[in-house]
Every structure is written in C-alpha cells, then in structure tokens.
Image (cartoon, one colour):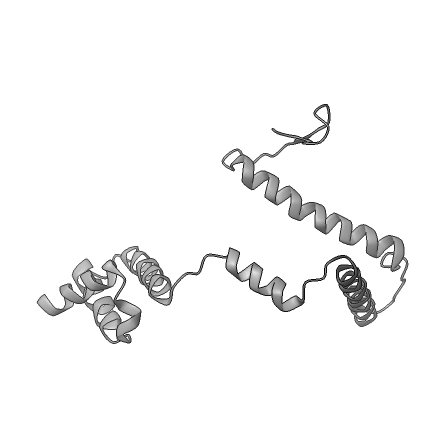
Amino acid sequence: MVYVRNRNKRNEYLVLGTTAIGLSEDTIIQTYGKRWSIEVYFKMCKSHLRLAKYQAISYDGIVAHTATVTVGYLILALKQREESDPRTLGELFYLMTAEISDLSYAEAISYLVSLFKDALESDTLLDEKIIDRILGEFVARLPHHFRIRSGRSRSLIEKTQTA
C-alpha cells in the first residue's frame, strides 16, 4: 500500500494498492498515473465519441469504428493541448528526449552479446572457450566505435587473440 498525500490539502490522500511487492513507491505512483490516463481516455471515448454504442456485425467494421474514434480523440486532445500549452510539438519532443537517458550503441551491443553468451552457455553442447571465441570474433568485426567503450567487448577480443 502506498499513501499519496495531496500537497494542497493535508487531509486528502490517495491509497494505492498492488500485489507486486517488489516495486518501489515511485514506480507504483508512476504506473498508477499511466493507468489513470488510459482510464480517462476510455471514459472520454465511451462517453463523448460513442465507442461503446457502435453495433457492428463484422470484425472490419469494429476495427474501422475503433480507429475512427481513436483519430477523433487524438484530434480533440491535440486541439486541447494547443489551446492550453503554447509550446510546439517539436519543443515537447525535445523536452521528452532530454529526459530519456540514451543507451549508446556500444552499451546496447555489449548487453546483447552478454545475453547471447548466457543463452549459449545454457546449451551444454558448447564449451565456454568456444563461446568466448565465437563472440570475440563477432565483437572484433564490429566497427571500432561500437566496441571501444565496452570492457566486456575488450575482454572477449583479448580472449580471441590469445586463443
């Protein structure tokens, strides 16, 4: 259970419950915030855009109606955002990407190589030295700027060169 207090009114609070006991309080609150946005979306679509009132016989008709309702919602949401927020979509995109931490190509490849190695090691037919040699040759063939930051990549290349 997570208790979230209203900053403006100390007597008001929200109780969030979850069965995922391994999640932090911040993660629970963020997940609830995302879920609430989805609930508002469906409420708006059902109440004002007639999502629930369409009675179709064919699957294609249902898909077409749902797509039309979604486009209608997107147009209304964009219009509402433009009236309440003077920032452009480009500015919002820039702000959003600034918040997301970038995973470099070298880190991504290093992570993928380690996952691939773990998958290969679970197969009892291959020896660890053979796996290291195969992965080392793969990493050695990568462009230099992809492997320069990864200590794991360097160690695989060194194992390949000494074998």
